Amino acid sequence: MANTYTTDVLKRQSYDVVIVGGAMYGSSVAWFLASNPDFDGTILVVERDPSYEFASTSHTNSCMRQQFSNEINVRISQFAAEYVKNFRQFMGNDPRVPEPVLHSFGYMYLADTEAFAGVLRENQKIQAACGAGTRFMTPAEIAGEYPFYHLDDIVGGNHNLVDEGYFDGNTLFDWWKRSAREKGAEYIANEVVAMTRDRAGRRVESVTLKSGETVACGLVVNASGPRAARTSRMAGIDIPVEPRKRYSFIFAAETPLDRDLPLTIDPSGVHMRTDGIHYLAGCPPDDDPAVGYDDFIEDHTLWEEKVWPVLAARVPQFEAIKLSYSWVGHYAFNTFDQNAILGPHTEIENFIFTNGFSGHGFQQSPAMGRGTAELITYGEYRSLDLSPFNFERIAKNQPFVEKAVI
Image (cartoon, rainbow, N blue to C red; front, top):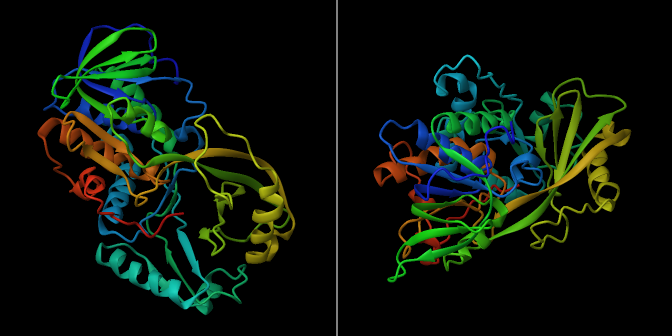
């Protein structure tokens, strides 16, 4: 569907909402806005690459978990699980819409120190208070349910089998994009290269496209993923978001496990899970700097020197495995506190952020898209109070830290 619903011709010269970026977040906001009967404005989504070849959306592992250290992040993922499981209903019972499956085999956070085990216990209390099924497990309990792990160095772990695992996130993306377009949102293949503010500097009056057109706007939504800082700078705003490489590996085991492998977060930072008939592993590089927006070059030593040894040490059956393929994607990494940046700028009142999700973007997109659409339509969040993520905390240098970042 990538190109089917995108044009390169503007229908008008002014839009109530201009969304910069048409991938997961641009399309989520566009769909929730276009679907809201109380919103009657015009929407323009500007996407620089309608093939989405290098978008974070195209490189996601589509994972979902409730194991966060902040209550609001737990609530956001609980809505995401509800949304995925009832996707067709949320899409108006459109019979064309498929019914994605949430593969709920859970996350398994492993702790190799008493200090980290203590963090897991505290997180479990927060999650349980929200109704999540997370439980802290001793090594003996883990071994009883998942005997394939090597646990000699592990002192405990958190696991939740309810609404945690992975789903086909691109199904949501494709249908948000298609349905938003059918409901009147306009998608254009172009790139925002500049913004013009009013004389007082309090509002963005227009955006300039790479093709030369100037488009007047009521609101601007920054949905630029890892390029968020570049888009914000066009309005004279600095935000702490940068592209960071994240590696994914698909592999087959000579002797497959006799049950699903939870999405296991090893203390080394490597994670692994069942992926259909194969397995998926991922990790950040040991040296994790900001990278160029177009830098998707793989470090092929990472598999041999870091990932495979960790897999084999944690799951001895993974000593005999074969790498099928791999890829690099970009996190839109918020260096300030690894949480999303939402809401309006503190001075430029019509500039709205949906940025810095630090790897949580796919699972948070239903709630964050809905909340941003509510903010635009009503001037407030109505379904979930997302104000802890507002840009204001950055202006005040008050981090809202999320400890459970993979």
